[in-house]
Length: 118
Length: 118
Image: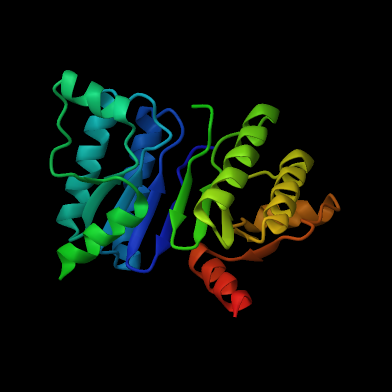
């Protein structure tokens, strides 16, 4: 299993991260995601991190970078499903997810994306 | 990471399988999924297996059992994103996914669920 599946739903792409990220996997996710944004003409990307108990600086940076790439391709990124403990750690470590909006769950994330497109 | 996240979208639950399944993970997925079907009043379950290169008899049985549990709780199950090589292996191994509908991708799976509810 060397790639993370990307699901398309209407104008949005959904990615659920549930495995430990490493360099190569993060790179292949960014490759796949940017490809799909262009190919599918996606307007938004939803990244679900509800399976992650820990978000370290590597994953934080990977998410920020992915969001920056999506923005350049005219797609908004929303991170959904963050666990309370992850939010605490992020702030304590001083990691801000630059350029990334967050929402409690995938439905609220989609509503946020739809709202921003209007 | 000892559980697979379940995403809710309207009346449907989405599960993407992207890690190697083992007994305990399969059990916790079935527990979580049946819980969520009842709690969210879900009418359908979409299981995305596009990340799986191999579906062996264990995963096949796990999917069939999960679908059977969902059916008892009045929710339909659709498996989406099966790779061509997986379809070939399933037939060659004589593994039929009993009681499970399939669709090419999540959008078609959702359309199928909506159609069956009418």
